Length: 90
Image (cartoon, rainbow, N blue to C red; front, side):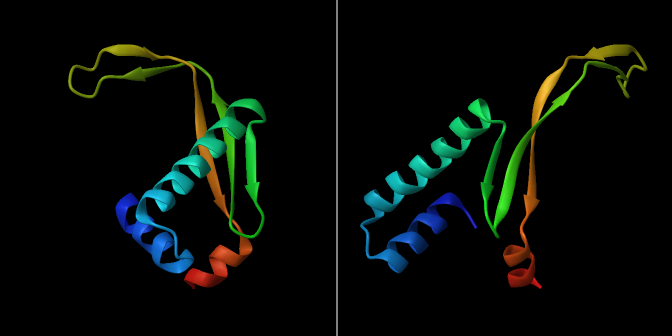
């Protein structure tokens, strides 16, 4: 499902215009990002939990040349499905 398909679904289910549904979806995504930046975790009970995880710098190898390279430290985002989401797709 693409973002536009999700916007169309939200508009149909809620009676919002597509423009309002787009703004609502964008606001939701911005809220999740803001929560991850400030708290490191966003829990949508029963649906999923977004969390940040620090990845330390490490050594890697360029598979084409075999050269050793340093992979910089970064913050990764993990998503864990909740019980209701797991039950819905099974």
